[in-house]
Length: 170
Ligand code: ZN
Image (cartoon, rainbow, N blue to C red; front, side, top):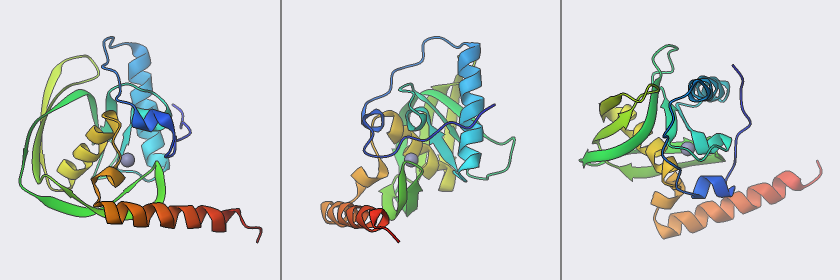
């Protein structure tokens, strides 16, 4: 198993809709194991394949952060979204940025597991938020896209100034 380097915004792989997985191979199983290791290495609660440069519809999630309780989701379709919820979110591909994002409170995803078998995920609470965040990654969407425009401008300015400050010699 290995930890993969992350792709950061504005990397184009984060902005392209990911391709459906057609072949449920040993390579896919290995990729999923690596994604879980990469998620833990960065203290994440979820990771989508585009975040490590693979434009395919796979993500892993584990809001409990307890090993062995990870879910691996392939080719998800959002079947139902109800209610409203929001928490402050961050993203491994958008460092040092935390913003409150409005989402559905309860969702249902139809998807496949690593063997291609159909699975249904009913989630609420933190799990529902994480699943929506990762699902968005597979559509080429980032949590920043769900902010109001004024908030997006603020975040863009802040990130620009953070970069400028970071590039100054100490
Ligand atoms: Zn993310």
